[in-house]
Length: 90
Image 1: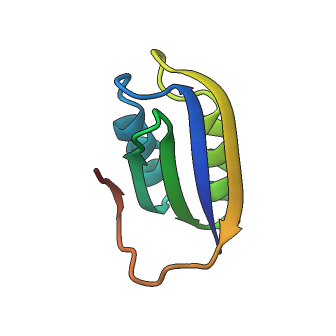
Image 2 (image 1 turned 30 degrees about the horizontal axis):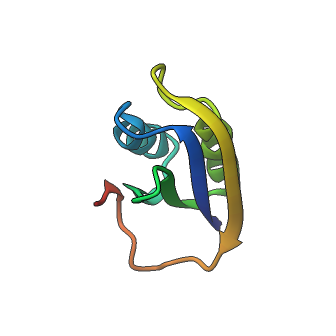
């Protein structure tokens, strides 16, 4: 099990990035959350099986069709045992 926090830059707001990330994470069996930040980036917290988290990191570079990702910065974080689902937050 692993957990990551990622910041995604580029054209990632207003293109269904958060909803698409939630769908991808749920398909991979991950829990966590995704939210827009005031500076135009998207923040993602995801945890679960190592291969699932790594697959989500690869997906973040693509995003939904309308997105144009220019960067994904991520680092490992401590697991959060309270997470039960993957949510879109504000």
